[in-house]
Length: 224
Ligand code: GRF
Image (cartoon, rainbow, N blue to C red; front, side, top):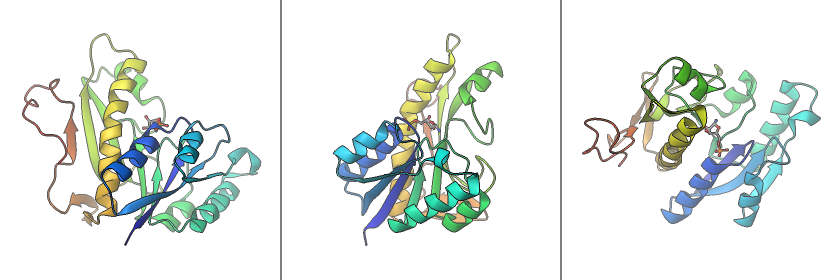
């Protein structure tokens, strides 16, 4: 049966776009049924509308507190009957009640190698810490911020002349690979939780190494 995907965004929505394109191009057994933003000016809303996807705005500024915002958002989402809710650059913290309502079908991408650097300014913090590698993590959402079972990670090198913008761009390019791949696995029923960890049913690699830049990674085929 066709799985219904709802995507939450706050801004430009490049991860959302990558998922929409992959879903169509790879003929997933799924459809992106809604793109919902918490900001009326979220750039990604235009792309969604142009692609015939229903859009909605739940403006956090129009709500007195987080619980009220979360409740409206949950009701709007339920209206689209999603099988999976995908957070793609969604910059609001969701409360425990919301997370529990969608638990097990709520995915997020975070631009760091979790559990390092949860929260904001991940690239700046990775540079300040002198990290030699950075990356992104797709994970199931739990009430604790930027925690939860890890579906897939990408690793890129940190270069000596990087600033947070060059590093962010290198990481973002890998986000556009690992997020569609993870959502595809979800809608195809290939992810299972074993002892609080995520396994890919067919044993595919849950790690993407930026090709050609990490010693020993040249022969790595990346995600399959
Ligand atoms: C991405 O780097 C995502 O990991 C982070 O915010 C950025 C959103 O980019 N949470 P986009 O809106 O998907 O283009």
